[in-house]
Image (tube, rainbow, N blue to C red; front, side, top):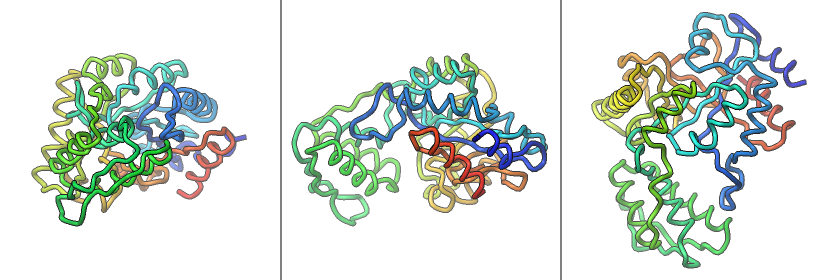
Length: 321
């Protein structure tokens, strides 16, 4: 059924539409704090559905065919952002088993033992052994108040604490954000793990398995808040690092967080163009067509667990586009 519906909504040729799915992690098993996060069983099911319903293409191929008006019907691409180690150890074997290509966008500062700022918070709250995490002594650098007190009596409470803390500090400058998250871990008396992200060797293994690698800045900043020079350095240096590791050109880019106007601005797009990338992806919902700016391609993922609901939301995203 869904294959027929998707064929109607995503025809071949000049009227073609490209659906791009975005993921971040695939956990080995269900996380009690984030039960909705994609785990291995759920991702295996999703890959099976996509293999049956869609023509899944490497992203660079899909972009070129979109540009030329030669997309196949039901054209789809799969992407991952950030560079988590489970992309290599969990996601890639599943993708390979289903014969599906995928593009992985890497924030390069966190390879080889680094840790993203949000994971410092998540791991601090996850492993804190007290029933409450008191962050009232930690003032936000912008002077707008402290980080509050957070109950940790259940997995739901821990998730709410994480979401509250992340929401308060997400848009701080990179250096201030990093310092504050480390103080949060200290306050929780937790030393977060340093093996959450890929190593350079795992990155090479992904590429050797036939997967594509794209740039995602160095430190995952909010590009809209950076000067033009700093944004240029974040983007250019991340690509240079990846090209050195892989020994080949990197032509794809993903904007961190990816919401236009909030996370990146027209100047960010200009920089990506001028650096000679082939295409860039955002996190705006929708599907790409012949009129889409190839440096602001939308991405969307249905987070439903059932085949029926996943397929329906996948089709609805195409319909609304």
